[in-house]
Length: 417
Ligand code: GAL
Image (cartoon, rainbow, N blue to C red; front, top):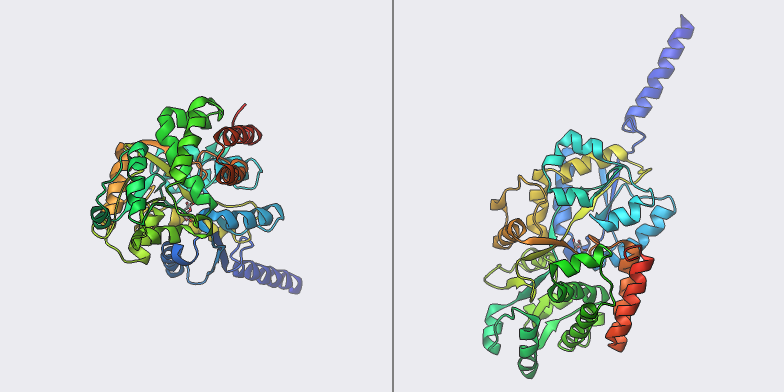
């Protein structure tokens, strides 16, 4: 009898210890890794506040590595994932950045069970589901849809300089000297990745939807005449940008539009989050937007998502985070602050400003293509290599050389044959 009691009490102690750890080996922490620091932080912080109220016993570690488009964060993440030290969950773009980088490297857990449990297969657009899936599963949960091809400006400033919004790049190049004569930069630009960001809008305009899609399907070469011509056009556009671009963040380039030292900026609609949430400006009054020249009717999309890396220290806490992030409630907390729209079909658009509502309209009616600069159509190998192609072109202005190097990169990244 004594022996039985001893066994029972040992079992009780062990199960109490397991329960204290969350039952699945979890601690009471959750590390969320992203590049949403500083100005980029409010939307994530609001979602974390909601998580805290739902799971008050979990301490959230909001681990950010600052730097637009995650260039720095992704480098640190790589070291951590390859070194066997994954964060509990991390920001990753839906599409090839996820699939062609971390899924092929076998670093992610399949989330099919979570999608089934939450009924999400019917709640997100099929194209987005496909972008996060392989034959073997679905690998992350989207929190938003961002648009890449947006041009921002201040209507009153354009009026004072006597210019109108250019609908094509030819129109832009035609007004470029007028704007320069007024002592104003026609197009604000920032560091390397913002140049790649501009390039994708120019390429979409010049190649059209079919040409753009063919590039990423490996059905078109970077050395084709129309792609070389795109680099040439890009060179002319770069001549209308600020000389100190390399030292500016995307926020500083946006500031040039706000303070009237630049006429336009082409940036994803996180710039809307910056204008509205950070700067307190009123959309369609203090600033306005349009599709980047030559891309009207096309929505170049990307999606921020979070996944569950294999061996995440706090798996159950991550799953609860993903449940919140993928819910319509979570998405409608996050996106009005972020400048993006919800990926979830049941979103309540009354919670969004006039910008979000117009983006949602376009998302529903435009032709959707994927962004390269933000990982929808290109894997990490291509994206990081493309930074060098851009740097080379900024230095030489040689369109044929840029096209040839991009073609080599496309082959080595496994996109082109
Ligand atoms: C993108 C990301 C956006 C925003 C932007 C600027 O790659 O998808 O959410 O953070 O970078 O940093």
